[in-house]
Image (cartoon, rainbow, N blue to C red; front, top):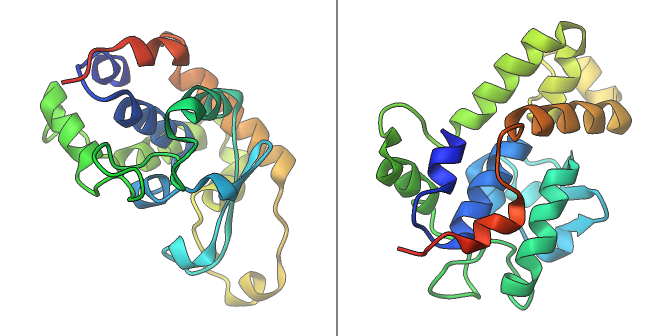
Length: 187
């Protein structure tokens, strides 16, 4: 499905945002509002004011996500947003852009942007049942144990980076290189 979407005529920024969303398994509004100053090296730190649970969320970026940032920087680096609106670079991508791309590519009723989160959770929990709590942490899910949530601030960044890279390798196993997305015709 991701390969079909990436071969569909659309703006390269939209296609790169879709791939980035799939790789990171975050919520689409977090990708759409992503600013360049949130990224340091291989870490993306989403501030609490943009998170559903109102706490900062650290996302270790697999190499394929970092490649997207390198490829898109010449296109959007002057915008505050990594994935700005195609019409107005000073505004974030519209909340309907990624959903509309999925629909136009023929996957209406089969997939939505949020579906990458459930795919990530399902597939990685099947592959790594011993890492369930780390996978939940990667999805920014709050611990159901209020005492643990209050005291445990462990990030498990090394394990999260390993899981993120495994997911990215699996997801993009048969995908074209990130730079080739720039060659897709705009609609």
